[in-house]
Image (cartoon, rainbow, N blue to C red; front, side, top):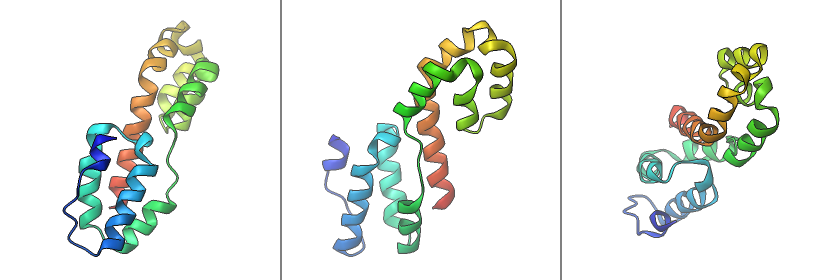
Length: 125
């Protein structure tokens, strides 16, 4: 949260800068902390329409994905939800590779979800 509290060098009007700060504050849990300054810089250079589109974009919650992975990961539901269809089918047919891939996903699904969210907003900007 330290990154969010730093002063920004926003070149647009104060209302636009406040919208950027609000967006980053409310959606910080969806991204890696190291990605916040990059997102801030891209948002400062983006148009008003891009910011409105981003606010309407639905991001996946890493905590929800972790819970899905814990309870339904053996069936590959977590991988289907993040769009990794091939691994999802593999987990579905093999029982999560006898549980090995399921356990690995418990530790990596949050990071993968945050990367998916970053790529989703990068495509918009």
